[in-house]
Length: 397
Image (cartoon, rainbow, N blue to C red; front, side):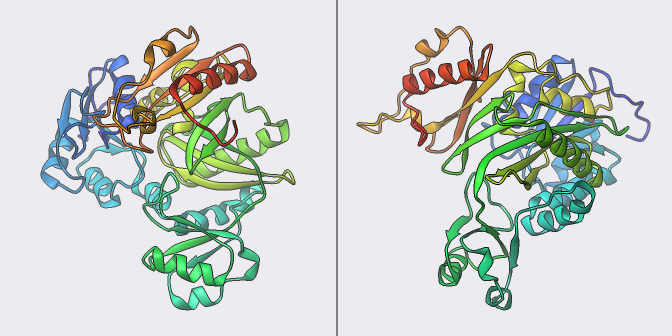
């Protein structure tokens, strides 16, 4: 692979590690530009594998599959943060351009490393992570400060969408929660007086070109993203400037190439903290498929192929509504039936996206709808109408 001429142009082969919906949109964006795509994912029904030119059915540490992928693909990216770092390093040793590199992915894989990294960045960007304590052994458990209560205990690895987390109000509850989580390495985060959450998605090329996509304001239900609103209704100029500096600082300190999501908390006193980073496109950026000139997945393809980044300017206000598997289940009988798509398709400014997942499950992300409108308020009216049609409940209704 050492004789590759950069940038890569179609019909070169690009690879993606991971076959979920984020991988599916990467495949679509790459194919729209004329590239061919190889997906590595162990699930024979993976959403990305269904539409790729080649689907390698293997685990992420399968050297035979990785060797084949390295021979086929000129550049490879990742779909989720839990791809083993050794897999990325193996591919790089085979002469493949892999973005992001294992250094950045390994930080995002572990909340302890992530918090330590954000503390280092704090002096450069003026904001840092929430107050926290590391709990990896009994001695650290005994020294937890009372000021961190009430708090949220989170496993250092493999937690997402509210999984691997427990709320605690005192040291006794903390001890029990740590035991329940298996006494694995954890982070205790102080519970914040939260006003709202913002997410920034930023793309960076191998030449240090950067592009910050429109900042989204997010609402969660049960730890899972429910709605994203763009432009963010409560985003001030001051917050925007702080997020712009923080996003550019973080992505450069990570030496990151690709698309990175950074979640921020705005507290009721107006202060801003960094919550977490995700080394990939993000659920809160799905609105860009319909609202932006260049969506987050095309930026991922462009950065991987070392093309110039596209313009991701906002074309229209938008609200993104997540669709979970819950709506496939009849509330009276619990039988699986098809949601009322007919009424959704009758909404002229609703853009339905389904991910091609074989089986609906409670809490599983099955798709989303983007509501395009002249204002976020109008898009929210349409989103509420769709929620009524589909039987989506919200604590904010």
